[in-house]
Amino acid sequence: MLIDFHVHMFLDKLAAGAVSSLAKRASLTPYSDGTVSATRALMREQGVDRFVALNIAVSPRTEHHVNDFAVSLLQYPEIIPFGSVHPDSPNAFSEIKRLKEAGIKGIKFHNEYQNFQVDDERAFPVYEACVNAGMIMLFHAGADRGFPPPVKTLPEGIARVWKSFPQAKIVAAHLGGQDMTERAVSALADTSVYIDISFAASSVPVEEGERVIRAFGDRVLFGTDCPWDTPARTMEYLDKMHLTDEKKDKICFRNALRLLGEEKNK
Image (cartoon, rainbow, N blue to C red; front, side, top):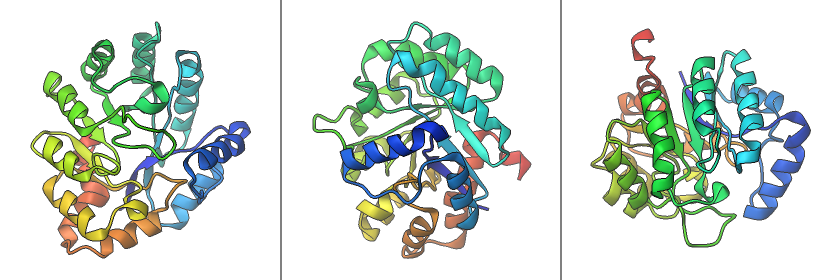
């Protein structure tokens, strides 16, 4: 079984423009056109059984529409959609409640696009609402190719959020910190925070990636960052590491099932 915990896609009418603008901004080449149909086909062709579709409310104005799209994705059995809320939105709490009641299991935060520091206490009530709802919080972590410094989601900032909400289900994407893996290990390895390996195949040497994976034990999730990387490339990256079959199984699906609360079903 293979679960990709980090995938992006868009409404068909928005996909072409979104992928084109994001690719230009970050100087990246997409592997998919970002539509639901193309993404589902790519995942199926490359052996992914289920995948987490991450959506981002870049502003309070877009929040409700983004979450409408997330809820619409529940119709596909292989998709695990995450919603998104913005800390400046007056409707953030009602949106979390709406998403929870619909069956959404997580919230995606991208602090660069949402323009707030991850440990800004104005966001703490929103985090608390996510925790109380039992929802996973997945953060873009570290640098983003499309934004200049300063980085808004440093590993140390995520650690401060975890210390305030130690019961939270937190995932720090991109090995815990894009372009700052050593800081991720130092700040987060001794917490309960999970990491995913999204985009690592395109940006982190194998030896460095393996060192981070070992530091996080059983809190590592397979992820690609599709359309910016693919399951096949990411699996090749993992296969170059000195990992046991048991360890790979945990990364590829068992850790995800545990975090999603589905471990007893497998």
